[in-house]
Amino acid sequence: MYDIAIIGLGPAGATLARLLDKKYKVIAIDRKKPETGKCCGGLLSPDAQKILAQFDICLPKDVLVDPQIFSVKTIDLDNHIEKFYHRFYINMNRAKFDDFLISLIPANIEINNNTICTKIEKENNTYSLILKTDGIKRMEKSRIIIGADGANSIVRNTFYPKSKIQKYISIQEWYKDNKNSPFYSCIFDKEITDSYCWTISKDNYFIIGGAFPVKDMNTRFEKLKEKMKNTGISFGELVKREGCFVYLNKGVMGTCAGKNGSYLIGEAAGMISPSSLEGISYSMESAKKLAEIINSDFDNIGYKYFMGTLGIRIKLLFKIFKMPFMYNKILRKIIMKSGIKTIRK
Ligand SMILES: Cc1cc2nc3c(=O)[nH]c(=O)nc-3n(C[C@H](O)[C@H](O)[C@H](O)COP(=O)(O)OP(=O)(O)OC[C@H]3O[C@@H](n4cnc5c(N)ncnc54)[C@H](O)[C@@H]3O)c2cc1C
Image 1 (cartoon, rainbow, N blue to C red):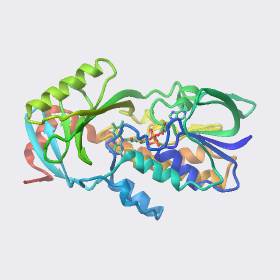
Image 2 (image 1 turned 30 degrees about the vertical axis):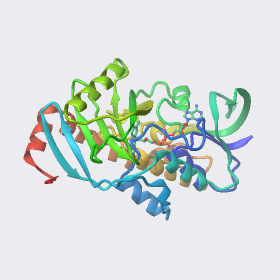
Image 3 (image 1 turned 90 degrees about the vertical axis):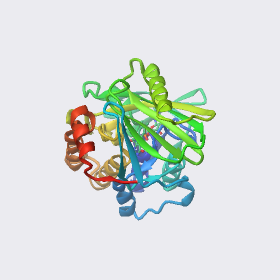
Image 4 (image 1 turned 120 degrees about the vertical axis):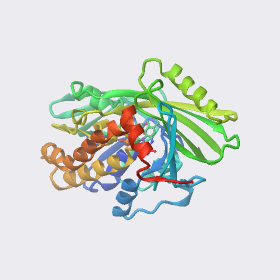
């Protein structure tokens, strides 16, 4: 019997596992193998950098990629406007970042990589988890369970099916760079998606991706590539294609902290910016809050964690208010034409 079972070792799960008191018996499970990254832009925002600074964590240089980019080219295909904005992101290898956070987890935590949690049941205040590693099934039991399992979370789907949140699909393709000058861009086009698309250069690869409504996602992605080719971007040899669900939390009701022994952190809790899809900072912040509460009062987590994450929900609310200025065609045109905060090249 474990005290705590953590499902998912992305930034949320790895941070929680690192911060939990050694008095607890903890199992941490992730279906991915080391060196396999999530489909992600891999940009570390200033908020995420600040949390790492609070943790006194320095990034090893092999987590970084070439080049570091200081501006985003915003391409508005609806209004045919392009502008550059100053940005302070760190361009990273997402797989190495996740592996680095996992490497900081103390040895007392039982880590199970390449292990998928396929079912969870609750009986008499105990959780039974069915785990599968290389096709072999086993069962483990735990007093509490933490869903750090990202979008399409099994913990959220099992215990909080009524807490609805929109699910989009992200698709990214990696190309051998074809002499495009390195850049990071955000692309807005209503015909393609009501979220946004992007390109980014990483270690001699040129990546193009977007977040799409599930219906017609492939057609929408092909349309994006076609439109980008028309702007003069050239694609080299296709190296890989990846995809994943992403939660698009367009209302505060989409966040769910959990209660009565099953809690959610990071994207599983809906803690991801609906405007930029930036989520690593919220994942680490919610994990930090939950660890503090578990370490101080194991028997009274629910309400304290809900209140402890109020600040995150308020930040997300501001992101929701910001959305019309990014996603409404007319408002975006006014903002971009005004030149506010743009940089000239
Ligand atoms: C295309 C895209 C681009 C993005 N770009 C950025 C960016 O540049 N910067 C940024 O800050 N954020 C970005 N985000 C958001 C960011 O990826 C997430 O907010 C962040 O990864 C959430 O961290 P997490 O630990 O909560 O979940 P995740 O990182 O999703 O980790 C969940 C983990 O749970 C594991 N898992 C899931 N289900 C199971 C199961 N049943 N059994 C076992 N293991 C399981 C998965 O393997 C995974 O490792 C992007 C998201 C997308 C989709």
